[in-house]
Image (tube, rainbow, N blue to C red; front, side, top):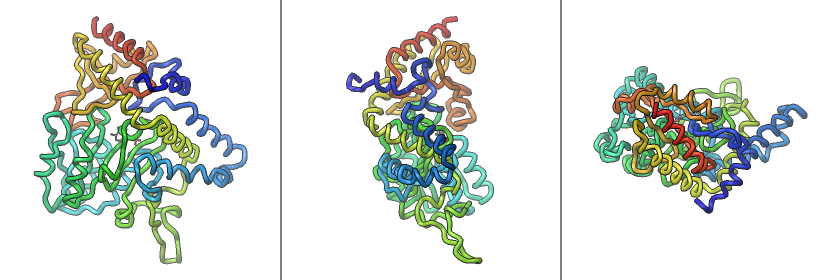
Length: 394
Ligand SMILES: *Cc1c(COP(=O)(O)O)cnc(C)c1O
């Protein structure tokens, strides 16, 4: 941890001067360069016009594809920018042609928006969705997945890091199974991109979605989608427009051949530039260094919280990430959140219907979610743990 220039990280994170922010899984504090790049583009739009600003910033906007591609190890034509992770995920998922009897295999800790989409599509088509059981550590059981495979499985769709805990699912092992069986593989990497190394070649996924505002520290209302080259032309977007397709004659149109077939013409350009800046910024710190520090800090926090009487740390998995969840006997998580807010400490509350299968299986309804990032410090975590100890000791 000594090698990490934490002083610089905090100087470049204006919010960290006055708030103890442990809601990075909700929306991280933007670093100064991201804020500046985003605002500068809005100012340019105001000064010279929105279309003209795009023309002037063409190279910067195109760089966004190179930045995202470098981050997850793919090529630039496999990237589409979106307004959030859910739409990125949706655009891919709803492009898949399911029919009666098809099976979708997913994880127990699947995110609500994804599961709602499975329910909508399976109820319409007669396909079925099934959750792969967890292993003893709470991760997707790769063994169980193997046993569930048959010729009806059309999609394996997994959340890498759930919104509600430190769990990191074994997505590369799952990818190996998907590849061997020749089954399409979709990964929701919303909480993991920016937090830990993500390499789509190592994962072996066909589709991956993520957001800008969480561990990448980009602006809100941004996200991107990765689609493997060979899959792009097999996937017809549910919506098209004059950017995703070209109107070639009164009777015909041609859909773009790259991943941008999933984009829309109109977009938040300032946000896109902000996200590209955030990706460059993260890579400048080094994703390996970020991940090491997050793991150290989260281990530190769990170790401080566990001995507090009444506190139960709820995270599962072999490898645990920066999302720390816990309950405190006798106090509702919402009350804890409000009490902490009075001390300029931000946390969020994980609720049952965000990850319903998992919460029900564990008999939980709500938890406190303290999600840290590399710019947090051990001193902050000690202050946080003392605040929790005080609340627990009423
Ligand atoms: C936050 C989250 C999403 C949704 O991301 P948006 O950018 O809000 O659409 C999807 N999956 C997981 C696991 C998340 O935590």
